[in-house]
Length: 330
Ligand code: PBG
Image (cartoon, rainbow, N blue to C red; front, top):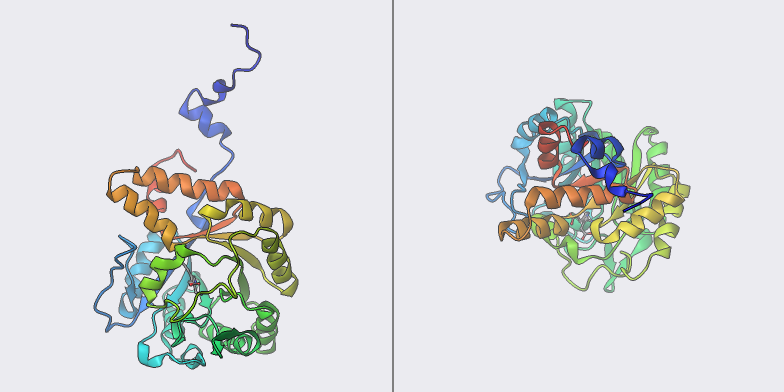
């Protein structure tokens, strides 16, 4: 046959494929979410997140050692607060000796060069399991922002490099920025969860931290999955208000959103491959229905290809191990 175009030439060998591959993913671009629990916690495993363990306060250094060996240098912290510390004001979130604040200090003492990011939202501390303060069955915006500002300052005082508000309250980025600056934390950054959808994919995470909403759902603050336009509006607003990076969450079912947001902002775009995305791949692999490593790779590269500069993922360690073992994926 006389063919002008033989597209397959660029796919003939692994070397050629590697030569022209458009997308790469280095462990330096990964954020490792960590679930920190008190030493009294009996159970570390999370049934809906096979292979992902909660970390006891006293086990933090060991985990960091492993991450360091894999050159994973950025962590995103979540804590599980005891039930008796939960209320409707989020006061434990401000406790200078709270689990979060102690964990930040411990990580920074272990290695100052680890970038510590912290989740800022009230759900682990809320007796209602909501991200904000509740009044008359409503999650009230402005009083919540007031606590989030103080919570962010408290994390910065403990040594956090970036605070990551995941609450989806309006105006929180500008107020957090102002609060940080007023206290002199001009170099503490803000990674804003800008386009965070109300998603069933957070289910396993809520098991991990025992933080499921006690009533209703999160649809009055997290975004409607039928929408795309407002992801751009949210991201632009957060950048205007001072966000250093924006995040899209979840990732895998929202690749179009990652792509749109990336085209519309001039700050790094992060994507969060959330607990349910991890659980899906683990479950299918356990059943022998998907090849685990191949599904993990494909999902992560799809997120990168869509436009994510940075990816938060529970696969970080597994990805890094494969990355260093093989020369062909980077
Ligand atoms: C808390 C928060 C959630 C996640 C990150 N921060 C849960 C939620 O909003 O209900 C989900 C992460 C995951 O599922 O991996 N505001």
